[in-house]
Amino acid sequence: MGTPTNSQIAAALDELGDLYELDGASIHRIIAYRNGARAVRETSVSVAELALAGRATELAGIGATLQEKILALTTDGAIPALEKLRARFPPGLVELTKLPGLGPKRARRLYEELGIDSLDALRSAAQQGRISALRGFGERAEQALLEAAETYARTGPPTRMLLSRALAVGDELIHAIGAVKGCGQAVLAGSARRMAETVKDLDIVATADDPAVLAAAVAALPQVQDSSTPGTHAVRIRTHSGVSVDVRIVTDDQFGDALQHLTGSKEHNVALREYAVRRGLHISEYGVLEDATGLTHRCASEAEVYALLSMDYIEPELREGRGEIEAALAGTLPRLVRASDLKGDLHCHTVASDGTASMQEMAAAAAAAGYEYLAITDHSASMGFGADVSADELRRQIERARELDGTLEGFRLLIGSEVNILPDGSLDYPDALLAELDWVVASVHTSFRMPAAAMTGRILSAIEHPSVDCIGHLSGRKLLEREPYEFDLDAVLEAAARTGTMLEINANPERRDLNEHHAQAAAQAGIRLVINCDAHRPGGFSGFAVHRPAAAHACWTWLISWVVGVRACSG
Ligand code: DGT
Ligand code: CA
Ligand code: CA
Ligand code: ZN
Image (tube, rainbow, N blue to C red; front, top):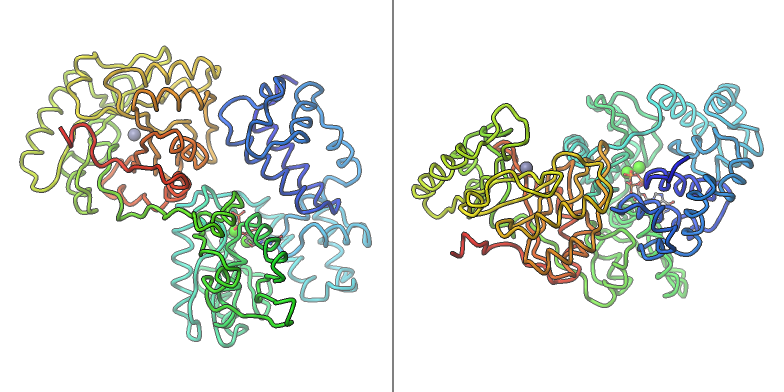
């Protein structure tokens, strides 16, 4: 094989994490591999090349051990530890650990005690009633496993979805569950509540005086296609839209405990538990146990859980196990950016390129969203849409926008462009025309697969251009669809900081770049960040919710200054 790509390396590290978990390794080791995989996936340059240069350890989350494994994969095409583990466990076993209700420990017992090494083997064992005979399983667990295995066989391994879809399905469900008689409240937990980039399944925590009654009612909701045998406090459902949902039902006095646990992330929970143990406390989804007194505190709210640990409340968006606990103890957590902090938007499209509405309609929608200003930034000439904005057309747009702006009370309409950065780093309008614009976003939209050095040079040329105010969606990824292009982040940050070029956090749910790591690094470098919805239609200004996490992470430094006074606004 050639040099492994970042996704191949990440897949190998993930597999190592899965196999170590089966092997009963410590949670720290497992998390180290999972975090490592995530770090590799989010790195914008070739990690194999970094490892060859002995520099992969410079990445947060990659230590000497992981670097050694990456190096082995790069030079020998294989990781010895991975080969050894693969030889030890049958290939179907990892798949089994992904079944809801199973997990590595129980999957391994099924393998060792009943020889179950695949989904098929699991199904026939369950049908023959062999699983319920096993200590700690029982008939209900056997039935649930059979159903889970059958669903899995039908629909394949769980695929992730964009946060926007997760929130749409999730919001409908929590309303439906909340409206069931006897339900107190129903809220989203899990990765959707943390506003993660993508979501595997939804997690919902609901309260009821009689959880079993609510569990049965949830399974009977019209949105539900099938459900695993409802337990008394939990039910796993699959919606007609194909989304899996874990619903946990608790009484009011444990709502905070359950919500905290099920919001995660797993990494956050592990770190939180470790800290608690050092203070003589044991946190679980049922309460906080005080070692000294043997007393279990039940928490009706999450705030009580964090207060019991003598730390500041941590917003779900920050619960990723990246130092938020230390910050909460030190009182240095950031205040999250909220929709109401946004004063305007500097990236949107109209019918002149690939948008659906006119300038007027977009301006009216932005004003209705509470914004004070909006920049129209249609794509430039070389994008190849039916209606590309030629230089002459852009000149007419400038006039139209200025005229329209004159008619708008208390609202500033800016005229700009989202200029394509051509492969050679040049822009596709004459310099004199670009200089006439209020605002220029430069983005890469074509030829993504360039060597990192060339891509970096291409972006740097745009940054150095005197008329470029901002680089749009730096990384070019489309979540679940297209990997980011490779480029040297440090070089880009250096140039952006030096030239005062802003960087965008794009709120389109499939983009969301800068990602949270890059946003944090940019903020630390003193670069101004712009949050844009990249709206292509009047309804597109409501995307803010999904870029909160990146903004939140950028806030870590307190350096962030939201763009309010752009050149044209102040001038
Ligand atoms: P995903 O993959 O998008 O569904 O991400 P999550 O975070 O929603 O993960 P999920 O659905 O597997 O689990 C929901 C939450 O339950 C998770 O965020 C934290 C908690 N949790 C799950 N497994 C464990 C575990 O092994 N240990 C601890 N401490 N917490 C866990
Ligand atoms: Ca989940
Ligand atoms: Ca789940
Ligand atoms: Zn755009």
